[in-house]
Structures are given as C-alpha cells and as structure tokens.
Length: 398
Image (cartoon, rainbow, N blue to C red; front, side, top):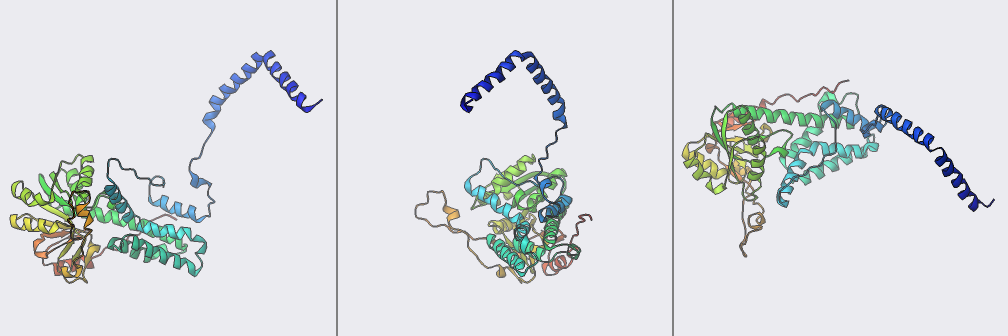
C-alpha cells in the first residue's frame, strides 16, 4: 500500500478504537490524574544552579567560603529605586560601587582562574586594582579596601589557593567595616541623653557601606535607643540629593526629621537650637583640621557662635597623620555645572568648592570607630591611629 494512503487508514483505526473504548480511556486518564496528584509531592526540583557545578571547581569553592560567612543565598543583585531623578540614580550607583571594591578584585581573579599558577595572574590583579582605583577617582575608601586585600591575614594563606584567599579577605574586610560602623554609632550615641535634637550634614546613606554608617548610623541608633527626639537634615547643595535621600531612609524607620535649606542652617540653630551637630568627615589632618562636605565650614562657625557642640564623624582610617594641617588637602573646585544644571541662569557660570576644610578650633570632637578624640588633636588623633585593633579573622570552618 502507498505510504501516503496507509497513514490515514492507521489514524482512522486509532481514533475508532478510542471512540469504541471511550469509557476505558477515560478511566485510565482519571486514574493517571489521581496518581499524579500524589506523585507530584514526591518530585523535587533543585532551583539552585550552584548544585550543578562540579565540587572541585573554583566557583564552588568560592561559594562555600561565602556561604560560611553569610546567612542565606548569594543572589545576583538588582537594585531598583522608584521616584528618583537620573542624578539621584547615579548617586545611588556611585555608593553601591564604593562597597564593591574588594569583591571587584575577587571577580577579576575568578575570571583569570586558569592563569592562577602563572605570572600573568598577578598582572591581571594589578590591572584590576588600577581600574578599580580609576573608577572611584582614586578615592581613599577604595585605596583602603585594595590595601587590605593586598595584605591578607596569615591564617588565610595556609594551604589554600590564591582565589580562596582573596575571597576570604574580601568577606573579612566587609565584616570589619560593619563592626567599625557599629562602633562609631555606639560612640556617638554615648554623647546623647533622652530628648536629644541633632542636626546632620552628611551624604552617607544606606548604600555607602554594609551597615548604616557615619552620622546617619548614629542618628538611627539614637532613635532606636529612644534618645533622639528630632533629626534635622541639611539639603546638601549643590547636588540636592543628600538630604532628600537621607530623609527617605529615616522616614522608613519612622524617625521624625526636618529638611532645611543649607543657607538656613545658622538661622535654624539660632531659633530652634540643637543639642549637637554631626558632620561626616572625609579626612582629618594631624592638627585636627577637617576635610568635609561643602557647607560644613559655615555650620561649624554657626555652632561656635551659638555654643552648640560640633562633632565630626569619620573612620579612624581617615586620620592622615602625614597631613600636618588642612593646607595639605588643597583647594579643589567642584563641578560648576552642578550649581546651574536645570536652572534658568542665562549665561551665568557656576562655582562650588569640591569640599570644605574646617579649622580644628571649631570642632568639639571627632567620633570614630575607636573612640572620641578632642583637643589637643595632635596628641589624641595620634593615639587613635596607633591604637588600631588587630585585623579580624573570620572562622570559615574546616
């Protein structure tokens, strides 16, 4: 029989048999459906792609190290922020990038794992360090992170490969930063009593570190300890993002806060008052001069005039004993377009400093993760730097 004619004949026999035995077919399908209801509970689906990797692969080793240090899984991170402008979104991106310096070096090492036993491996790491520093405009925070990565604890170098050592060191660096931020917050709240009203000038938010950091971390801890009554935020010219972003973060914690224009800070202190002003510092010189966000200098003058304590908040690692005084910080200028962007200014040019330098005599004290330093700063800051804690060792298990 012609194959083309044979196919319709077979199909006719098939569906004819189904129609004749329709009750039997329906019974078979019903029985299969019932069995499937019970059997589906026995089906296990592994959604963790890490389980499909060979146990000896470098990726598996790295994942085991990270799982031993952190609870939960290690997902790919996607950050979505609603109701922000493009400059605000870029500000978020910049803060996230600051956290990732140590892990960025690990990523470069994993990409070059096949070269681990060759001289080219160190060349790859050197190139990654240079790229990371350039991405953050050679910031001190990034430099400190990469310096930490270059000098891992001895316990991490015994009988393990280079990539595992880098991953363990990166985890340790992040944990050490979290501990430092918490210590800073504790030291800051030690200055508070119930009903404290505090004014903040800071651009460090939740994305700046692995934990609430700087003046924001102090404010949050003070509120949770029922010590703070009111937080006032300077808006943060010229970008105008710092104050608004921090206001959103504090509002999530139900912290009562007020946002004021930078130029109204002195009048606010004169009329409303505050028990203390907290400003996040960038660097401190040996004599106590402070490199700080724009607006800190005039805030310090207002506090000095109205006899309000003015505290700088910074990491002990940001005390530069090689800088004799504030002149070592230079007089860099900021982006002039940040002043005029989006405003009907005609042909007027903008100008803003990149940062302020606050003289030491205007500063009541410096709150760090190690202590609170007060004048004479030449002595107290040197003691703070010398009393560095031992490098943390994280137990990753055997």
